Length: 255
Image (tube, rainbow, N blue to C red; front, side, top):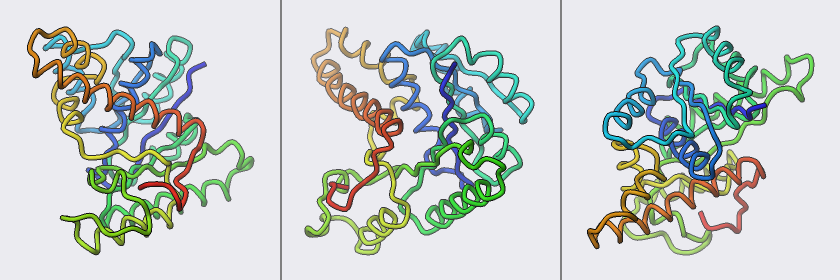
């Protein structure tokens, strides 16, 4: 039976699709077949896969299917749960009736949160919804766990150690809010940063396929780029491991 991960947020642009692509890249690169269900009316994932298909940057371990409502969602999960190891569900960025449907089919819920006031408020609303769902459930243990992932994090915060000086070129309020969000939501230990490799992933296809192309290239500059994609893939695999290990960010961790 497939493990189902639902990626949700009541705010658009929080990084749901990027995290979905990262997780799919990690699963595919480790030879785990996965299905991505695209519940977003903008069809970011479907369009991404269409572009990858046209340019030859596809991975046979990834399937992509659109869904427009809860019935489609249930049907796709039922149809593919024995064919794949993982199912990723990318959702639209607004509160909707599909949220309960998503929780009913998911084993884990992932909520991306950017360092911004609006994202912080919407993330808290999502956590409150999750707590209310558990309080109303006949068996609260059947409600999937919810984990917050910090997304689109500035690179100079990735290795920052709490208690040390503020990184240069970072606004004081942005720096303060970063740690306030960590204290408020106890996010997973792995954050998703702003990386050029993720932008290439958005434009081309899964990280592993891009990595293979750069490794095979005769261009020294592209061979050098392969190293950066190896790092990006290792980061994606670490995120997967932290989701399943439920490893949260400790106060002593680098942020």
